[in-house]
Image 1 (cartoon, helix red, strand yellow):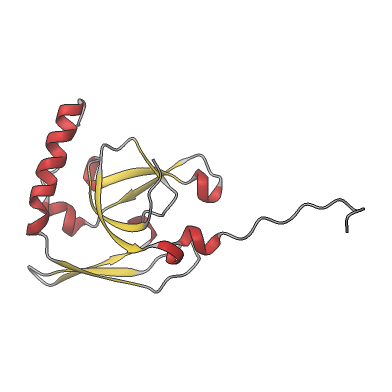
Image 2 (cartoon, helix red, strand yellow; image 1 turned 90 degrees about the vertical axis):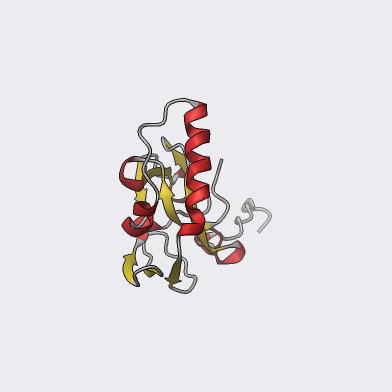
Length: 149
């Protein structure tokens, strides 16, 4: 299922808080891209061992969601723009005022598909017309024969 907004992941169930996404709908590339959550937010959640069964995934998801209230953070992101390859922002964790930079590796785009990763929890930074997918879309050109022109 495609992601419905642009968001910064706070935790991904892959190794080291990483996840893989397919961007074929955005740029036509079929290779999976490695994305990840900032180290500070991943550290709050105990990374589970390899999740194999549906029961393990459900249990890990429940435990992760229970720990969300422990996370206090502020995300600052650049204004909406069309570039799907660049992103600048920062995340500041309230508990120790530690600030980490955010870049394109930390932004999951609308229209991408999460692959080879059980689940991912994040914060939406752009929705609707402000998503990079929508900002890059344009009306389909009309196809007319030479006689009709």
